[in-house]
Image 1 (cartoon, one colour):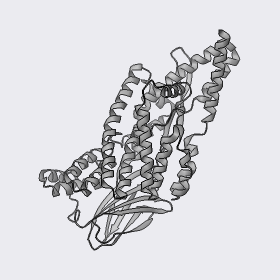
Image 2 (spheres, one colour):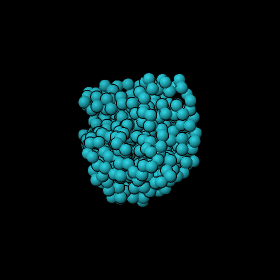
Image 3 (cartoon, one colour):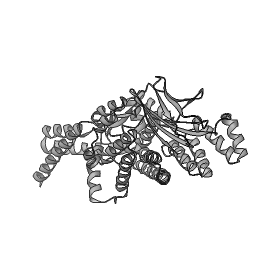
Image 4 (tube, one colour):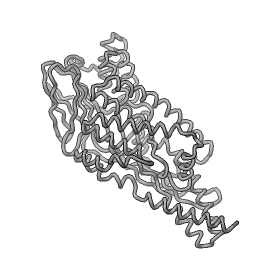
Length: 466
């Protein structure tokens, strides 16, 4: 019997080593070329890093998110929408699987013994919300208001569902008692990285209240003539992005148009008068995206085991990518209107990671304990050779999951300007840098949506007139 057990454990170690070695190339390394191409405005080249045939297996969700983002930047909105929908469907499938289904049990066992990378990528909570806001933009750019409205409704529902699910996961981790020391362990391992992550996270009101989704929803309702609904969503949006000048101005404008005089006076007292020209003429709504989303890197630190001794954990942390751009500028008729942030991806990602750390840490502790037990078993069965093999297997397979949606911008900003009806063009510029692009306004346009991605090669623009 002992011989069979020993053979089984030895075989398991071989499998562990194979699984660990197969994932040594991190997602951050794999996508480096794509991020470089995006920064240079070569979205088609970046797309070749994520061919459709690669959207299979455990990384399918992530590959489809990357493809959808790049296709949107290229103006291929129908294809982008399809990718977002496929990603959302797969996320829903992963969430709806029975907890004790055979495939999920296998994946969970693999993640417990090996690492999180053996599991299918299901998406971060903020990604699951953001994709619907971005897909709503696809529908808007395709002229489909009803499709945009559906995506926004889904975004609202997802915010509530994911908030409740996260609360249950945190409660479970805390009850198990394994997550309590995560913060102290993180600070001891890299106090500077912890302070930076915490500082960035402070700029995010909540992972589960997305100002970009609310603002796009408000726009959809306003285009459909539903001003009351648009105003309600603006009030939600200002809670998540209180410093957004565009949100502030639109709250004043819509409260005025709806005859909510007490609200109007309150907003003006709080934010200041937006200007008499705000709200008259052709409405130009600019979505300005710049920079690169943060990427994940491993952070290793020791965890003391209850039975004594230490094991080394490896958890993901974000590395933030600096951007030479601060904002966009809309220049028309002698005016210069600056864009304001509605979605700080750095902050939201940092907040999401810190909120998830107790769960990740609890899994890490459980995995470390199991690997330590296996190593002791091998040591008893095989002596020094068994101990060395077990230690090596633990080291090789202990890798932080560095998968994350890398094609996102660093920030999503917006600006809204109202120009005289005779105006036929305006200029969008990056600040600083001075990269410019001229936007033509077709005759008869009441509303114009401008989608802009800032790159080192210039501004990539897509427009849709209503």
